[in-house]
Image 1 (cartoon, rainbow, N blue to C red):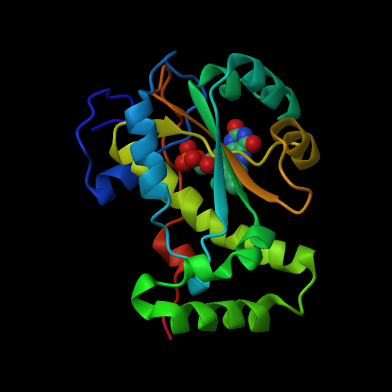
Image 2 (image 1 turned 120 degrees about the horizontal axis):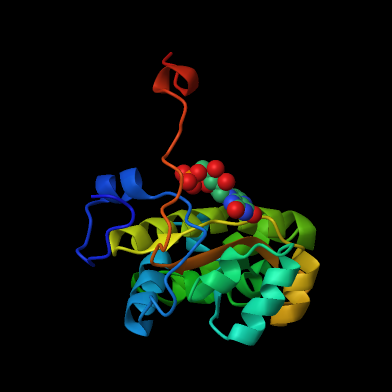
Length: 208
Ligand SMILES: Cc1cc2nc3c(=O)[nH]c(=O)nc-3n(C[C@H](O)[C@H](O)[C@H](O)COP(=O)(O)O)c2cc1C
């Protein structure tokens, strides 16, 4: 299986990982809404500390907004080439204000109260910026899930950090305290990406 194959068989996780490469040119209109929603749903299954789920996703499909997003990303053309770009950001103030909703229903009212207390104890004394950084780190787990979910369903992506976060926040009407983890253009490859090139395990793994 190569990254340019266009069938929509569900790939096993290892194959999705082995065939995921960054793609920067896309086939127009190559992302049906139902598949996009499934990918978003799978991305939302990412784990997070305390089950905080601080990530939020804005899907940019409008051509006009894509043009503006591209300008905020220093003209990177993959944004207008892809049928959609998912903006992954975190909103830890929203999490703090609604901590009870992240408590597992199985834990009942007592669990909700405990969850609120946990968030107050863990983050209440931090600055908004410090806890935003914490939430941003959690959101990268969702980014990974989104990329592999997309690849697993036969789609391609490219994670992007090359953008001006203040411009993107203004464009999308995000709160000032939001942290943007990445932009993620998504669709089917029109041109294959570069083959993967990674360190051998001997360079990055040690055993004690
Ligand atoms: C957090 C992050 C930010 C990145 N930002 C950009 C970007 O702004 N523009 C771009 O073209 N690629 C970007 N990339 C893609 C990397 O260049 C790419 O993942 C890396 O070279 C490995 O190649 P592969 O994804 O094809 O395996 C980014 C990747 C990550 C993980």
